[in-house]
Image (tube, rainbow, N blue to C red):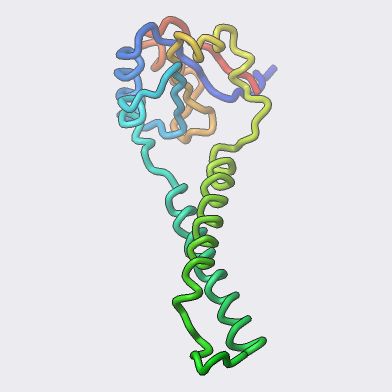
Length: 178
């Protein structure tokens, strides 16, 4: 009988330095679908796993550009094309008066892009995650240091990866079921 598919393998480490060392070795071994869980932010782990690339700044930039374009073009259309009105001989396209609304829409759409882009990239809201079924994983929010290699990683092999993780001297290794 075949074993059920798993989400991945989760290794628990005793100290933050042990987690950082393990993260370096996991990345050197070629694993890329890896995540670390710690009770506080650790830049060393992010650098060790080479996960410091984020798409959120690009989403914010594109949202800001869309807001600037929408704000300016909306005002231009209203003042020059849809309802042109010559008041005291002033030019129809008086761009300085468009700046406040253009600026406000730039900030508004950039901030919406930041919030909703971050939620989408992080897969939130996520009321359930397979790691919640692992006994002891709740310690990740207080004093636990965990490293998970997902089964969808191209280099993942259930037995070989488990043996590799055991060689990193963790406290324990768990199979994470879906």
